Image (tube, rainbow, N blue to C red; front, side):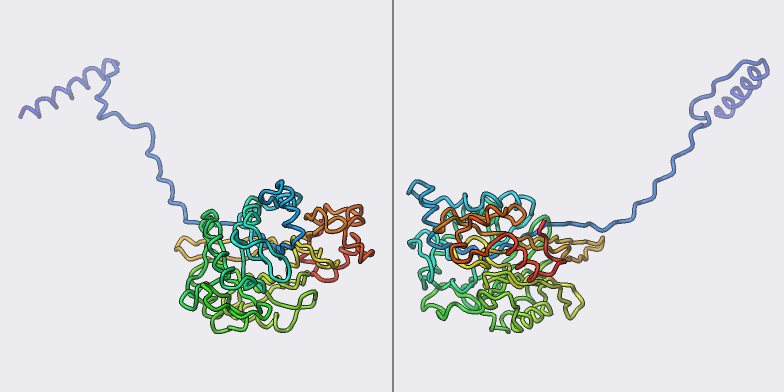
Length: 398
């Protein structure tokens, strides 16, 4: 009843004041809203996430006596300083997310330094390579058994002392260790590393050795490892120490093994051992994947004595991982290219150091110690070797 009386009074007031021309402010609750309600924005469609990484791979870091003796002198006779050797190429590696290298000689601090034919290299070499930017070290090659069981143990103990982000592949602690695939994850991209060697200079696995290499002839083991690696990682990188020393010619055995590895799940194959450069190519896997093979990167730092062993190449490619909203992903290799690198020394193997070909002048070439035996060594000679060996689409000489 009271409610009806209030409504009647309110209506009477409206009529009274409305007719007299007096504006009546109604309560806020009954005022019209001049602003329309905003329309809800549509929910954006999920988009794929793309991650890219730059990867470099460097050839045979082969540490002869001339190199470690010069490093000892630079350190004042106490310890070693190898940094001089890499100073001219150091900046290049800063542009990469991952830098891989074939460490051709055993590294440890238990054995005295030794040169050809059975190498041993001071631990400072690894620290100086780490400072350059290398994080992934392949140690499966024909010199892995050079110091017997003790050398293998000393090498593994040494690598365990390196920073945690150091990755080492190529030695396995017996068959029970074969399923322990070496993995590295960078910015959400997981890479598996495997490494094999064709031979160990006729030296069998030493008795009592705590670890062993896997030979390229052990196809069942290799197939099993690559298949497992492909299930664990976004990308499978395989190192093969194979081929004929001093030869630019790729053997049928190299080509056949590469195709098998690609069919099993390898995405990138990095070849080392010939100490000279060989060509590269794309291979198509049985499942249609495009995979890249660099058959030999040639030498890096060394004190060998022939012209072509002074010429190496560093592989550079981009890894692209695309992850779909449903969590599935695809990883591909893009834009592989080989950058020539020159190992230079003065007369009598003095001041051994590295240069990129683009920085290597005619004057430097004329002063190379290798000219004592090979006076034809020149920048033009280097250019001819590279262009006659490596396909133009993969060679960057600029």
